[in-house]
Image (cartoon, rainbow, N blue to C red; front, top):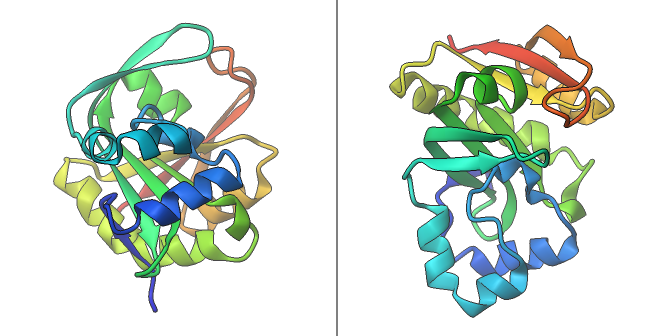
Amino acid sequence: MPLKLVKPSRELLPSYIEALREGDFNAMQLNFAKASADEIDADPEGWLARVNDPSPFTYTMKNGRTFNVTEHELLWITDGSRFLGTVALRYKGDHELMNVYAGHVGMAIRPALLNQGYGPRAIRAAFNDLATRARSHGLSYVYATCDPENHASRRLIEHFGGVLEEKTEDVFGQGPNLRYKIALE
């Protein structure tokens, strides 16, 4: 079955919780209602409401610096029956967060599926949808960032047209960062 992007849902929640128990992979969510499996089990409907809430939020970095994200959404990658990963879309917010540190797009694949080709398949299947969503928010390009040592992310971003614009040694006390620009044609 082809991969697609969907809003987090009750139907896929058991598979998402199973993925959480495999290990931490949701750092890309940037405050999209990050919670443990036990916290979600305790209030699944409340958690789904929070994770699907399009309201602006403030992201606090490890060093205490805060940024506002005003237009965003979180989507799940699925094959129709199970949760495979997340795509975080941050359309608008503080310039430094989008254009220097986090970019507009973040993706995470569940731990049990890493290095099995799901990242490229997910982006290939969803790229037109992602581009349409971003253009509807007034973007003609998106930034994607990654750690220089994350070779899988680097290859994925470059494969989908990412052009390296900047390497920063220490972004906001978080460590090195590569920023790529991807045109939305």
